[in-house]
Each structure stands twice: as structure tokens, then as C-alpha cells.
Amino acid sequence: TEKRILEQYSINSGKPVGIQFSKKIQSASYSPDGQKILICSVDGEVIEYSDTPQLLFKHNAVIQASYNDSGTNVLIAPNDLCVIEISLGIENRWRYVLTDANTYRYPETTLFIPTDPNKILVKFDGESTFYSFNTENGKWMDPFTGHRAQINSFAFSPCKNYLLTSSEDHTVKE
Image (tube, rainbow, N blue to C red; front, side, top):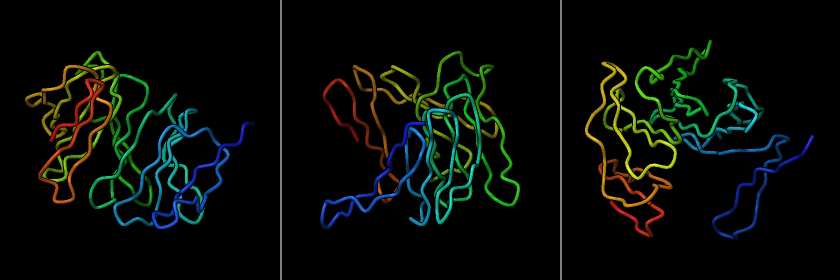
């Protein structure tokens, strides 16, 4: 098997402080407390890494995963017509929060909305718009528009009141 290395970089020195991992990594993110790393591999594994790796979920392929603000839940965007939420705990229970009944597009990136635990942001593959979805009632909210080309990334501000987006239209918007 091909060995990949997921590296952490020191902000002070710019040098890697390194975590070796034997999977091809699709994405990685920190838990809110910074004590764990959430790793998505292209073979469909979602792994939480602290002292030792723990397999949280296995799917046919996973593009991206993220923690909620408290670190108790994980939102997964598999390469499929769905979004899955895992409630972390003794059993790591999971549920579909978005399925192909809600959309016929591939979710590429998902985030919990920090100010409302029942809402998520969803960006579909190749789109210049992203959407808010209420996981409690299954309804779509108004779309976020403004970019003329595919959105590449989005992130909340530390105060959680603003959303920053970047796009292939050469703009960053708040």
C-alpha cells in the first residue's frame, strides 16, 4: 500500500511536526478543542486521530468531514447523494440528514451553522451557490449567492457571525 504522511506545521517555524498515516488522505480538520484530528481517506474511512486512530465511519468514499462547535457531532459529505451526521459517544450513532430525496446533486462540502445546531451549510459539486438546510424539518433555506464561478471553500469567522467564501471567479466574499 501507498504510505501518505499527514503533516502538522508549526506556525512559529513553518516546519512539519508530523503525523504519519498510512492512508491516502482526502481532508483533515481539527476538533474545536484542538485535541483531535478528523481525517477522511479516499477509501471512505472517517478516522478520529488523537493518541490512536479510531474509525468513526466507513462509506464508499468521503470527500470532507467537520466537527460541530462542541465537538460532539461530525458532519460527513460522502461522494454520494447524501450528508451523514455522527453523534460521537460510546456507540457513535449516525443518521442521514440529507438524502437523494432532498436533492439529486453531490454534496461536496458541509458545515454545521454554529448559531443553530439544526442547520447545516451545503455546497454542491461545481456550484457557485451554497445552501442552508434545516436538519430538523428537512427544508431548504434561502441560497447564498454572489459568486460567478465554483465556490472552493467557506469558513465561519471566530465570532461565528460571518461567513467567508472563496471562488474560482477570483473573489473572496464575506
